Image (cartoon, rainbow, N blue to C red; front, side, top):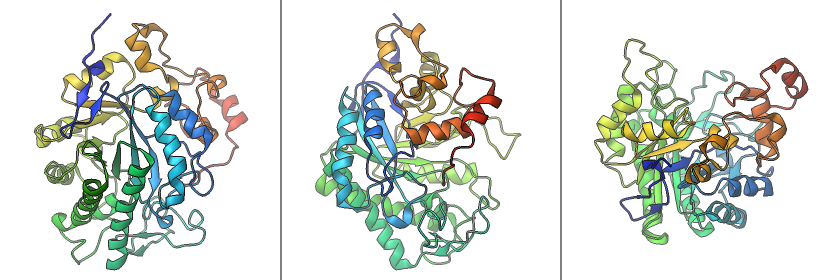
Length: 390
């Protein structure tokens, strides 16, 4: 049986120990109740995937104005703590560390999702994906409140029994909106040059760390997720992200997490530059922080290659939807039985919640490696089901 380094334990600088180096990437199940309360389907979903080193639970909004889509988890009020505690306990079942991803959608939402409330962002600039939904600019007092809300959400994660939080600064949500020159046109301390556009991120990390120092165990994990590029013009370029990574590498966080669909991706914007983005990022980090790489990791060979090329931890999303027992099968030397394709008939068997099933049946047919590649009939059967915001 092959001895993989990803099956060896990993210990963060703060003492938190993972039983292996496989991370479950945050997966948007879209299956919470209408108000953001944890559903039993979500509890079962995470329970079935316990056994990896760490599970990063899907995005939870830190206030009602930060909601990005229907079926979204919430950590905005104390009343959500009991449900979140069930989620953390489910993740712990087979020894996984439980990390809750916390976020504010900013302008990446709409009035329908917010029940008539106008979205807000760093500046009153509409996103390209929805040019008719112009957000309002957050006031200085509101920015301070959002920062406080992230701190309060962290405290609720501690009370619910999570082992950490991941600050979601990727995927064009609010933190990225403050960093981006497209969505941040401010001229106060929260905007302007790239250093000022990082002030919101620094203040937020400081508040989360303040709460952790006061209320959490010493080995409570704080991570940060970021996207290397965005397509907007003006927008975030890899040179900007490398400055962000340099700053984050000096912050009191425990890991960085690069958000990409393919961990070996090169620049989307500069086709002449064929150096992998994660290689650039690792060079800047210079071993100051662990890096989680994610994207198109399916096989044990894929995971091992990521570590050999410099990643500290390797995350899977789609593959752990198809194969909840991926780590266990590797441990038992039963790699031949690992699922790399998924039958539509097996989605209930695999514990995939209804909201996630609907998303996979419409927008992710190719990415999920469905066994039924005759998608016309499949789309005809399921494609008329309701869509989702966000």
